[in-house]
Image: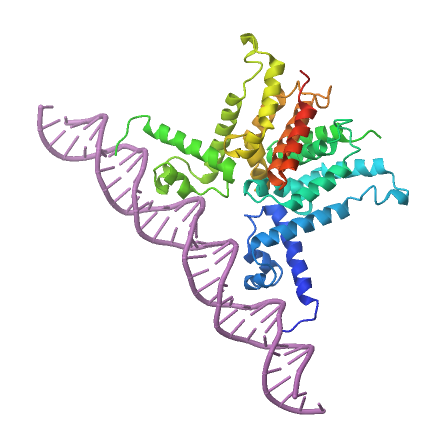
Length: 191
Length: 191
DNA sequence: TGTACATCAGTGAACGCGCGTTCACTGATGTAC
DNA sequence: TGTACATCAGTGAACGCGCGTTCACTGATGTAC
């Protein structure tokens, strides 16, 4: 079974993609390597040709999840020349982040809201988490919370991550929606 | 081995106490019943004389963690007649919640910041979580964020839970402290 | 007061299961001659 | 152009381990007679 020159890289990419989804949806501990590889049509033994350990896959998947998130939600600075309205873009970003769709589909959402708690608890803080926090902070500078505070992006991010976490944990659907709505109203910049 | 009449209730209380600590510290999946019972000087087989399943213990432990938290942080309404200063009490509550000590000792801290993410992800939302959110919301009404918004307690709670989660997940200690400080400054009422 | 029995919290072996990781092996293909 | 060999992504059995749960059993004590 010799493969084309980029075959291995392609397989590695597929493993990361599937893992990024599963880790966010089921947690790191809740994701087994056997079912993961099986879902890709591979056997689990081959995993170690791509990664030295499960933890290495966690790190790679976290970075991939972040990239996916930042591609999904456009960067106002990057798009500044395209005639895009930065305020409108930020409003859309916040509305998407705090939407029931994001709450109900952690597998393709923000890795901070789905994985940060587990990573912190398991004693494996990640510099990738630092990088995501920094980029989110920058992007959330124009938000409406804590006006004038240079750290208002961090305050907005904490409120967003907390809102998503709580909205997923409460049993009452009305309460869940109320949490998302309250935080959105508090941090979204005025139209 | 016949025991005194309240012996079983006492053992049950000890199991819940130890579990409440371990669940918050290591997560539900990360806490095994065998080591848990062993830590109490018991064998794991006896567990099922007290609880029908591990999930039942999770629910009982969550409620116990909440009680412990609310006892630890005094209730301004309850203490109103004692000459206590409600504003000062709330400031202390928020400072304690967003302290490095709370960040570094999830085992005796707020169950929302340690367990809500796992409960939401595992698809076991809990009405106990709803009850904790409601009590925190009420207690945080006088906070400084989103003034005039009737849901400002929820916004403050989301920011606090998110801040603790993120402060535990980032690798850079300075960043970790910055997140806690930023949220504390944003929601603490003025002196 | 003395004896036989019922109670039941806790014991400890066993169940099937999935986990992360290791490793000898396969076999299609590229390269060397 | 034909043959022998090296490569290496992926296979699949096996490792030891801890998990939640079950269950026949123990044995000290309270109760009934």
